[in-house]
Amino acid sequence: MEIIRINDNKLKVILTEQDMTDYALSTEELNYDNTETRRALWEILDEAKQKTGFNAAAERIFVQAYPDKKGGCEIYVTKFGEGERSVKREEGKRILRGRVSIFAFEDFNMLCEVCAKIHKRGGVYESAVFFHSPLYYLFIKEPLSTAIFSQSKLSPLSFVEEYTPRAKSNLLGAYIREHGECILPKNAIERLAAFGAPVTANTV
Image (cartoon, rainbow, N blue to C red; front, side, top):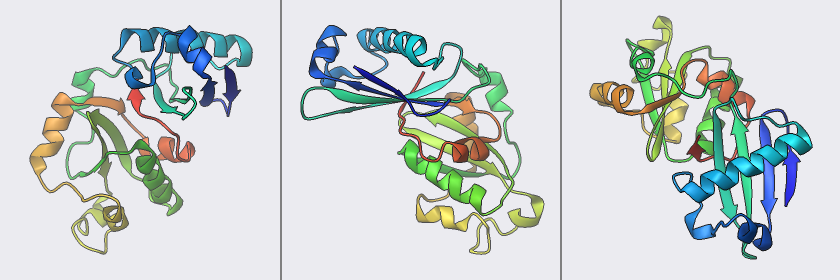
């Protein structure tokens, strides 16, 4: 097993086929809902802490595993900090009320890429991210000065629709607040932009 600390928030772990056997993992069952996967992941993270100082014990993290052709896999771990293990649902319900644009993403990397582009363009927005399987929902509250253009090509966020359509139902926001998991309650654009485009999938 090779453990690479990319930076304070990113970790890469390379497992060989023998490592997979030792941890009782299989490429077909690499899912955090699986008890063995969860146990193995935290054993690996414990070892990573000892070897590299990467501590994810009190953090909210995202994980994605990429099986390779030799029977092993690469695991990427990204943590978001602030010691947040969870966000209460009641808090999530109150996030970003009013005129909000909502964009849904199947791919977390694409979400990060879009956030980086929004941030690079100099826009400052209230923003949050919810997860409701299998999609990530980016909530953006535009300033009043730009919100009036939210449905036109004059909107500073119109380019986002090149990646994914803007949600058209006002009921979607209420549904996602009620049933989704709020993983980034504030400053989501800035925080995801800072990661560049982390490779991630499962919420832990």
